[in-house]
Amino acid sequence: MPCPECRQLTTHLFRGVDDLVNALRLAAEETERGVLSRVAARELSNAEQQALDSSLSSGALPNQVQYRFKCEVCGDRFSLAANATNGEGGWTREGDDVPSPIDLNSPKDAAAWEESAMQKRPWRADFFEHIATEIAAAPGRGRILELGSGPGFLARQLLERLPGATMHLLDQSNAMHSLARERLGELAARATFLTASFKEPDWPDRLGPYDFVVTLQAVHELRHKRHALPLHRQVRSVLAPGGVYLMADHFCGPGGMANDQLYLRIDEQQAALREAGFTHVTELLREGGLVLHRAA
Image 1 (cartoon, one colour):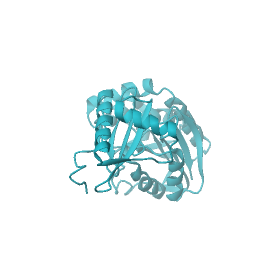
Image 2 (image 1 turned 90 degrees about the horizontal axis):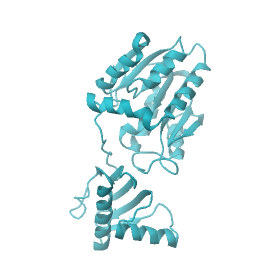
Image 3 (image 1 turned 135 degrees about the vertical axis):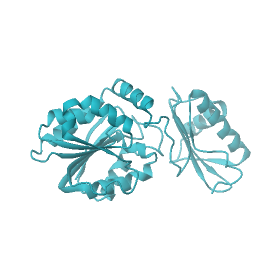
């Protein structure tokens, strides 16, 4: 429960670099006042400590900003993580879900995401290819569920590549389903569109069994990494015997994302899959801040 001293330090996204600088300055003020103390995930060298002190006091930013704090009054912990170039990131009270900067249920926001997705990350096509290759290597096993299917980029690749496959496309956004139907055209005859949120506990009801469950750049839309393990357990419950989970998402850490409340490190992704009951977990591809795992 937030105390009066830290109640105003609420979870929020930054709208740009100015918001990031303001958050750093507020954190420095609250640290100076004795309300917050800095928490390091590991022991810092003298040079790292000096750099952190300097950035907090002056707003001088490294390329990636990632700091942790603790309220000295109530013990609540906070994470400040952002890309210093564009300010993308936010301030999070640890344990809170991270708000989304867009509303994918909005036709306007869904269309904007569709238009920018491949331009922003053209290497997504490499993930499409790897996922299709994995499924093609198991002839006769073509019943596929895609979680967070969005505007149908991956579904089109799979249905074109795998003529015997059928797909269930699960997404909470009817706006995304409309875009997917348009993208798939005649291929939509082999797809079933399911409107549901995979954050809800009952989404697996009456679904399955599937030979493959696939997902690309969607698990973080749970909006906090603590939700990943329950999702992976649900996925395992809808897989047929011998079924395979192909899970690709952003990762936190070098070469990846800054927000360690929203995104899991690669080792955390693998640990969550194993804890969910998958005994064989293999990294297949790492590129552009995304990583693909095969779990069976």
